[in-house]
Image 1: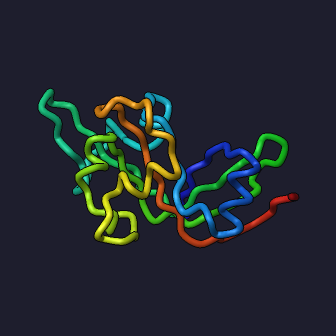
Image 2: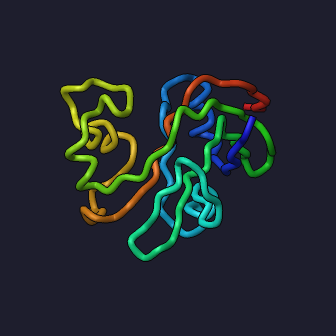
Length: 139
C-alpha cells in the first residue's frame, strides 16, 4: 500500500475519526506538487505538457497523518485527489466529490475551506478521504 504522509492538526484528526471531515485541503505549492506529481516518469497516465515536459500523477492508496507529537497516528484511505481553482469549483458538480449533484463543488468546499479572499484562479488541492485503516490517536 502506497502512503502519502501529511502533518495534521489534532482537531482535524478528531473530525476525521468522528467521520465529519471527508476531505483534506492543502495549498497548491511546489512542496505538495513534488509529492503528488512525477516529472521524470512515463506511464499511461502521463500528461505531456505544451512545453515538452511530462507530468505523471502519483497514485496513493492512503494518507498517513502525523500529529506533531504523535507520529503515524492515523492512516486513512485516499479515494483520490485533484487540483481546483475557486473558479473551476463553481462550475463542477458536487457529484465529483461524492456529494449532492445539484450543488457545485464550490457549494461544498466553501463551508470546509475558507475561499472568501482567494482569487478565482488560486489553486488548491483536495484529498477525498475514505475509511480509517488504522487509528493510533491518543486524544
